[in-house]
Length: 127
Image (cartoon, rainbow, N blue to C red; front, side, top):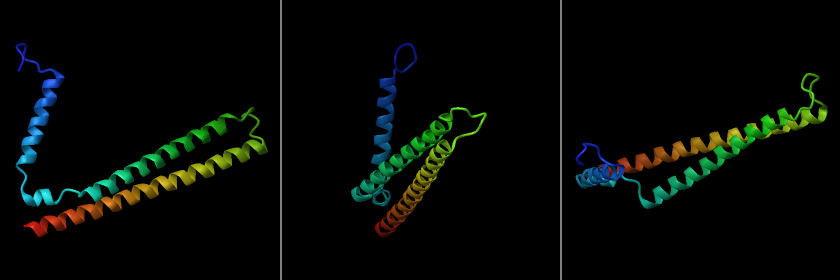
């Protein structure tokens, strides 16, 4: 510890890394067997990418709906048929993007449960 009693961020990080390494070193075979395999980790990473993409698409769709609504020239008179059609199309795409995001979240949860079950089976087999 430094003389003034405070640790620098680098010292704090080094202490945390050393503690994490010590904790990982004390794990037994059963605990290690429950870790995701490289294939499972790759599946999780791919799922993360798909979910991030779906979330970004939904965010873009929400912004597109707002932009379509803001494009109404005279809102106090109501939107023209062309503006109404643009808003309806943007809302349809937003609903689709929301369904896609929910589907990706569900798929991610199912994958996580499957990987957890496989890890539990591997832990049981090692014991």
